[in-house]
Image (cartoon, rainbow, N blue to C red; front, side, top):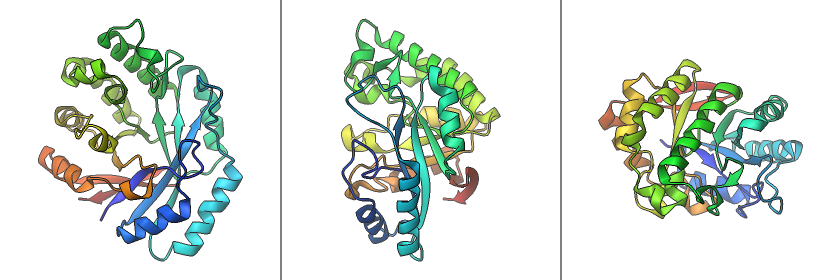
Amino acid sequence: MYYDYHVHSHFSSDCEAEMKDIVEKAIEFQLKEICFTDHVDYDYCHPSINFDIDVKEYTQYIDLMRNRYGDRIKILKGLEMGIQPHITEKCDRFIESGDFDFVISSIHTCDRKDLYNGDFFKAKTSREAYLKYFEEMLYCIKNFKNFNVIGHLNILGRYNGDAAKEKLEDYFDVLEVIFKELINRNKGIEINTSSLRYKDILLLSFDALKLYYELGGKVITLGSDSHTVNTLAYKFDYVYEILREIGFEYITTFEKMEPKFIEI
């Protein structure tokens, strides 16, 4: 039984897949649950791209999907919130008004510069980039209230070749602080399998996951970060094997922002 908690639809400006087609493919793949986590990204550094959602329309469409397909799959209303230190209060207000089941806190813009197009990495060594990224992440964990997990925690390795060569083990002192803060706040992390499509590696390394486990981390979700119908639950079987090897017995699902632990 797989539960995909990072899925995009046509409500995200970088995705053209229709929600109906995604749900039907998820049923074909025999997924137990699917959580739509379309983008909201305030103050994104390229104003030509609008990462925003009409919550009323989004809710109505998800309700339509639930009414049509709810006897075959559980459909959750989630969000991937692009977070930055200066917008935490605005993000909290938005989420509090939306009655969401699940929220991913993701950094797409750091130091007010874009990660995707590489602006953030200019005039920085890889270590400087990582330390700044983790600094802003920790601030947001402490000051952003309404989220459940940190999304694609090692996204720098996806977008920059030099950053991809860095070993997370060299930042375990920082990661320990981040993980402890998450654990103290009953928050967690996601394992994002998109890197297995792009680079055939899991960016959140075995040892980093083991560190989270040894510190007492329990909240962990799986997400394909799908923007097309055919990548749902991508290599979740492989991730389950890794989690079991480390010692995890459960993954986490959510409803109305409350966690539920599912045996793997």
